[in-house]
Image 1 (cartoon, helix red, strand yellow):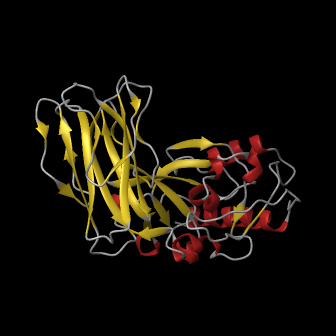
Image 2 (cartoon, one colour):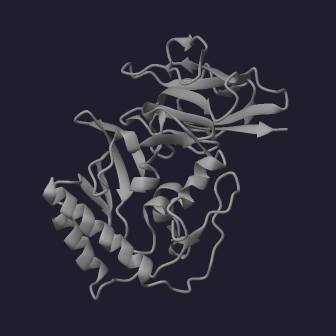
Length: 318
């Protein structure tokens, strides 16, 4: 326990050091939540620190925290932190938009759920994790369970991005500190041949694959952060079976473990205002992306033995 506390104290001192040095005049960029709220953030140089290079700190962290993580995903980099990694997708964005969320307050990242861009959710359906204002760390769920614990990825301050088990990191958090989130709106995940269940995506993002010739076999769809009486209902057309029964609110439509391809889907909203529409489109073998359809219409094909490979779903207010 003393060794763990020492390592945590060392880590927190490293994080504090960046808050006091290396602030630079990177050209400012506007950072907004998905719902359009401004996010307070700062910029730091993508260089070494303390007189040592990034590669030195990467190696140091790998050795110092050996046994705490499963895999290093990316190198040490003081230009972005855990909050921008999790909420602003900094690792995948261009370096010109790397930033630190939390330079003005330890609660700066809270705007992502305070403005209802994200909604609290059961861990089994969530995509994002917060250790709260005290432990002050943000993480992404991978959708996997290892040795009975959920697997996550997160950036450890200015040190590398690691894949690790939840609560197995320098922050010494526990379940009582932890809240799980998912994007408000419509969320969906696909079961794909040779892959299995993918992570949840939302609001028009692609689920499934393109260019890999992998069939979709099942799908789950749910809505979050909207009135509790709203429901989403859906059914799929499956090879050698035809149309399956309607299901709703995160239930599985399709099959798993039977090697049956999804060929078409119908989706509709229930108990929502008449000006709200659910629209969706399917990526189909040999045809590519088909036209958008809505409100219970068929996306995909029937009677042609063509597998669905990907889908996009979104809500629209008319």
